[in-house]
Length: 269
Image (tube, rainbow, N blue to C red; front, side, top):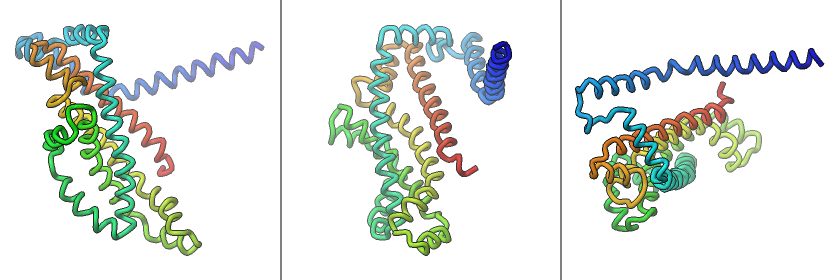
């Protein structure tokens, strides 16, 4: 009994040590963020920038707490994240399908490629008035804008990834009797996955940009609406609190997605 207890304690200690070691290893990666926070405080406290233009971090933190306790931050955050997740999710499904079909079937490529190439360089924020005109001021206009903006990078990534499939693998699968559909599913899709997931990461960041841009212009709730409304009202500490919230959510989403990428693409190691 004594030995078992001792072994468990040792195991727990080593697990704790491992986790602490992992944290200690990762902390230096975020040193620039800590330096940025210090520079913010020095700039504000030293009077280099007016308080109204750049509030101190402690006042921003107090404003964030007030918004959180009052419920405004959560209510608007849920609205924004629902729009972003809906638009991005639709873009991932449709973009992956269109891109791989473009690479695999020439008629699809001939029909879709000119449209993709035409709309890809266009600033997607220019579509905001069009979406409002067609779909109104509700959620639909924001979701469709995010969908259209995220669709193109995902489509091109899926297309390039599928087109880069080693032809030897395709010939080998066909020579062993695999159908065209099976080759597409078991050879082309795994080959395209690394580049496709990189395109989805780009689209993830773009979804936050399009979300806030659209809500700043036409919205009655959401993070973008809060930023515009608080800024117009002169509540700059609260405005910065919302801006930092969006930045932290985007950062967290990117880190979580990178973890997912590493797990899904572990076979590449």
